[in-house]
Image (cartoon, rainbow, N blue to C red; front, side, top):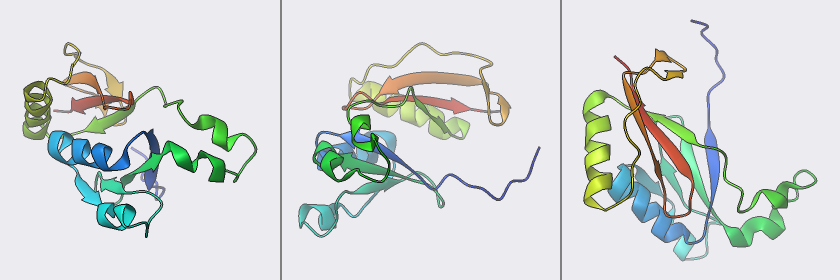
Length: 142
């Protein structure tokens, strides 16, 4: 396996209600919320949730589209989620996530087996959506 020094820093997800999204990611997915108080106080443009020590999801409100001027057409991405984001978990965390989703009546797909990913073939995986329609895959490896 190649040992690259490049790491994934963050993914920006468009959301209707950043506070509600942060609550979903904290309570259902089990991620640590960041800057929620600062966002509600108007001191931050958006809150985030921590996926790992190195990676976060920024929860960008659709109202930020007017400020997306870094490259031509950037504002057009609002409301157009990526196909899906895949979360790689340890087996126990994978099972706990599925349980929390089911307890909160979040629809989940059937299990898939042997799907290829960054670490080879996953033992099991499944898909779910967040309240804003972003699609996630959860998986675990052997």
